[in-house]
Amino acid sequence: MRPAWWTIARLELTLAIRDRGSVIWSLIAPIVMAWIFGSMFGGNADAPAPTRAALDGGANPPAVVSFVAGVLGAHGVVVDSAGAVRVELPDSLLAKLRDGQAATARIHKGDASDLRAQSVGANVRDALYRMAFERRTIETAVREGRTRVSPAGDTPLALKMETLGAAPRIPTGSEHTLPAMLVMFIMFQLTTFFLGMWVEDLRSGKTRRITMSPTRTRDILFAQIVARLAWGTLQVAIILGLGSMILGVHLEAAPLPLAALIGAYMLAAASLGMLLASFFKSPEKAGAIGVIVSLVMAALGGCWWPLEMVPDAMRRVALVFPTGQAMDALGEMTALGTAAPFPLSNVVVLLAMASIMMPFATRRMRIQMTS
Figure 1 (tube, rainbow, N blue to C red):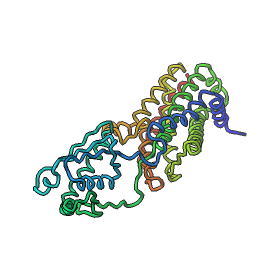
Figure 2: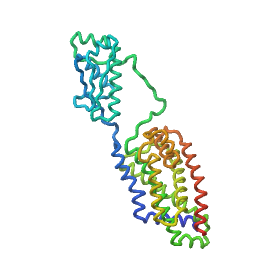
Figure 3: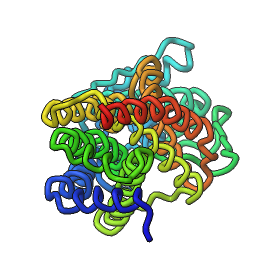
């Protein structure tokens, strides 16, 4: 004979699967939104388009211009007359360097982004420093009438770096948005659909009739937890599975840390959803508040934009919410893959959140069933 809690949990899951809106919003919408937002943030491109810069040498000899162009090219900047960023070299550049005078190049941003213009500016600064070290070579080329001079492969300013362990990488648009949509829609489902269903069952008298049967109250509450965790597990399997097939996104994280993180997050989200459900008597109000809460936590928790982009104060605010804890750990897993450390602090905080909210939620729900 099957335990009563499993029968109730299976009924809850059956109702969720039969609800067309629930299936669309929790299983299909995350894939669609991950594709849309992933395309907006760069899709699955391996690398962004190169920066193009137009180089205005003024009255400087061609050898000087070719040297600067060579340094820019070594940094990945494509020197093109149609480039959005325009670099204007100061006249008599070699003479200024020989006499120890200030040599200031002008960078015109044009239609390029601030980041690309700043990158070109840094590369031009490097070119001027290198020109100071190789000035005699360039002056010799100018006297001999040569028009092309390539920078030396090594200079006293060469910077060599070594990364110990796996080097972090910048995730593509879809690699960021798919886990973000997973986190957001798990919270969305557990604080809207299941919340509204509990309130509706209370209003219709269904929960009270079950309570009057030999079924124990703790079985009913345990069934609510199991149903929510089972639905969250289904979301994880479908969203990550379809994401890998449709979007080509493979979350290369160690299975145990990922499972521990997702499990702790689902438990915290289920606890929050049950706690919210205990404060409402109207399914309409419960659903509206659930949508607002889940969207606010998704935005502040880093599901809409990477936490690396926000100020430190807002990053600390994000970690107050379960969504922020989950996205903080998932961001590190996406960047480092299997080399990412076990997200112990995130898992502990999520379990602590669940341990605080769950007793309050079950106590209030027990009062609702018996009052």
